[in-house]
Length: 402
Figure 1 (cartoon, rainbow, N blue to C red):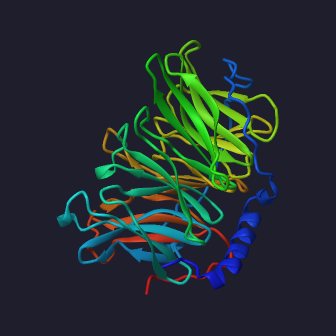
Figure 2 (tube, rainbow, N blue to C red; figure 1 turned 30 degrees about the horizontal axis):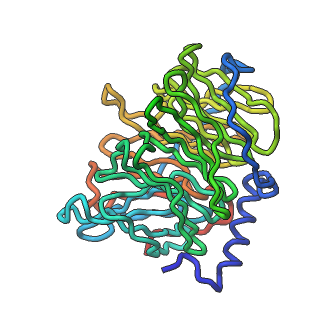
């Protein structure tokens, strides 16, 4: 079933564009980026940001903020798992019946928290669950893993899906000489970026690739020898691409930002060696990064100003034009670390603090909603085990799944 019928497609796209323009400072007017030749950034960087501001403390997020919820249990044998979103919709996976083993396929649905509707969208490849890693307008990009969801070196697929037209396109696949543990795909204006490792007879390299969905052309943004440099976590927005790069020669880790639409030199920002991820806002104005200890930062690319969003936060990092968010996590001391929703416009951080006896792994922005998990006693079969959705765009009406 198509999420949006052909008769509704034009109207649906118009609504998505209006919402995106309202939330992204008219990023829709940004021209399609043109790839440039691969360049290696200068060690040392052009700026060394230090936290010179901290986020304002906002009210904690609670179920009373939610405008809709989805029961954790889909039916007697299946449990829902929200995996991402686009526009006003949240994409949820239906876990396969565990009695069928690891090779059973996942089924993917689109949940509209505004009216409670739930529509089947696609069925996955047996034994390979998918995660929505990024979205832009009606396109999403997913990462498909091997059995059990493992990010094995030679078992991942990056795929782009258009949830209005039903089009899908395989972007990259590990296999042969190409692999790497984490492709981390990112999408902007019909182009997808990801990182991959290429094992050669004489050397092993890492490269960030850029694929144009319309033309099918793929180009290389940067390629490095793994004996001297390491690349990870590419993120795409506003015709710019950012990534993390560690240099063995200088013993530093940097955020590198390249403007693909101009010949401007790369901007580099030295960060902690423990940096685990970087994301760019979809308007290309900010990057946010996380340390392995969960400290979250935001850098204004026009001024270099760095804001500490919060120390000791949860895992993951997600960015739209207006919001940066992350999931809860459990640390080595068996302590639950909070999820967070940071509003760039207001400078306010709203934490999602896990409650005693409630399992809260998921908690980040999905489309126009902040979605989080609340499973009582970690049991999805209990009536109070739900996924809550808090609207981030004014005018969204809502209700529970009915």
